[in-house]
Image (tube, rainbow, N blue to C red; front, side):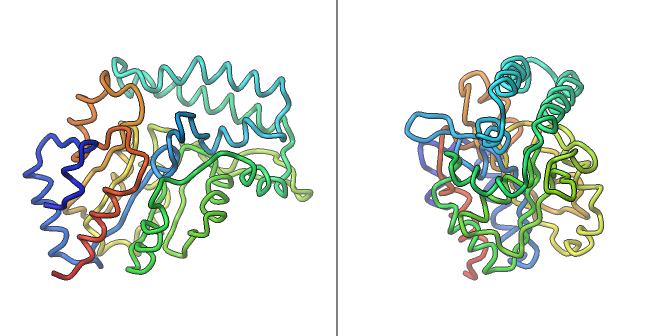
Length: 289
């Protein structure tokens, strides 16, 4: 077994099954693997030095591009809807219309702010957004072995791409499915493009992009990385999937959510701000021993 899997922050419902999936995937070889990941609080840190780190939405919400009045309205929305999002007693079906309501209201407020595209770079630079410790090895290793990294995010595509770009790891093997801004000819935000991608319909985002999935037909082995139960459907669009290893970051409300996470994810990483476990799995899967 991989040594990192015996770390105190790692929990597994069925360690034997995890070991079997890893063995099978390693045997099948690197060319059969793809990685599907969420972005906010999965590839980025949940907290640093005891302080919450911003999501791609927060980066914009807390920035100089947003008026104080709009910031207050966005905060009100967060206070209403975030507790619903993480409420383990409600089903995804119950949460779904409320999540759509939240994102739609937030996007409407952002459009009213007439955000300028050329200022997004500065806003990301000035923010406290951070990729998890060990991110460079994760991104570089996938690129080096030509393993596709598909990022599904209910966040803001333009902002999260900028975070990855500024970290120097936006490699050609990355494809992002997210909510992208639509700017007018003067570079001012006028709308959001296409269908709304939220926490519970990421698979539809995947299925809408079936063209891209043609290239992935031979990649039947999936490493899925997320931080919410909604992330578990991200791989539903994968063609002819053979094996999937699901890694879940449990960042918050650990005691009340742990049981549900252990049922849903193969490996649960409790309050772990690093990419240590995903990295050790990748190194193991791509080694030729």
